[in-house]
Image (cartoon, rainbow, N blue to C red; front, side):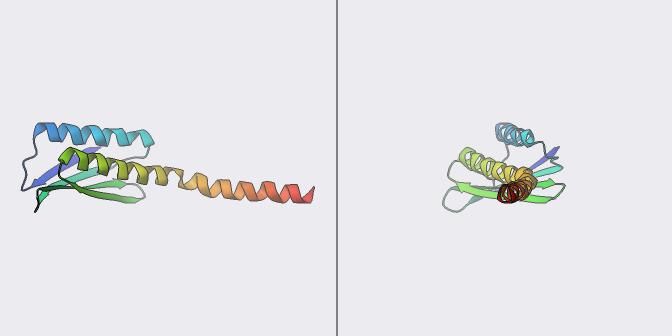
Amino acid sequence: MTINITGKNIEVTSSIREYIEAKFQKLEKWQIDLINCQANISTEPGNQQKIEATITVPKGKLVASASHEDLYKAINEVEHKLERQLNKLSHKPEAKRTKVEKLDVEEEAEVE
């Protein structure tokens, strides 16, 4: 997995880079192939730090963004948003199968 980190009006230091890479490494636990990761960091008016992250997966793209005064809190928020999206993506086939199985079980109970 490649991680591209770019900064607009902010210097991407080694500590910021390591923190973002560590957060993206946690996303690999979902066992979905993460093809490419892109993170854009920018400073907005009012002392707000904004991060936008895009992850390319085989089924499409996952996008999340967050703004906060503390950059590290914004990175945490983006990581949580991406984690929720990956969770939903990984459990989608199971959700469809369980509904069909429940209907079959209910029909069998009615027949007996």
